[in-house]
Image (cartoon, rainbow, N blue to C red; front, top):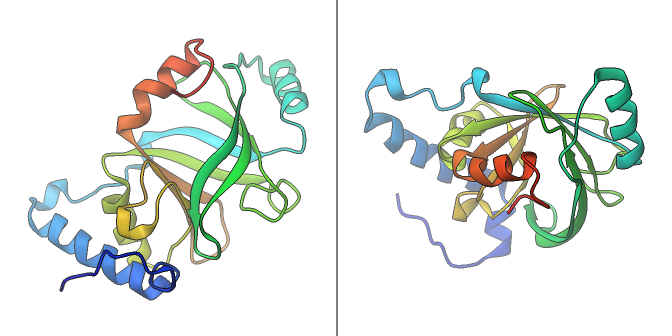
Length: 196
């Protein structure tokens, strides 16, 4: 089956199209590997727990006191480009802070009202997991009824460096993050001004 990659917003917003596209890609990925290599999302690769707060700086101070956390310099994406099923590609302002010490970290975020990052709508938010390729890792989850709520790129472009998936039942989101981004995050956690 071939897919037209020409821009067509209504196709990207159709979750059935997204599921079929990624299921087809995952089928070919798995069947070109041995069965032992087919597992693409490993729970042991969790590297952060993320949640949303009304005031990022106050939350950082409270967690420093309560848990003894040290923090990387907070960063504000003034115009972060994202894709969502309801708004397609657009930009948002997103405040982000990560605890500096690992291997497990805390991520605090605050985004615009009405978005997936709105602290008034959500609190316990997501688990971040390193994966080799976001679209490959997302495909079996989508086939099981998970849905993408936000990603760096549209589905036909493989979601980019991250994608947040909502389970088909109640629960936290799972953020799949491409391992290729790890070096820039490690620089940030080590003292750089941001995740670049």
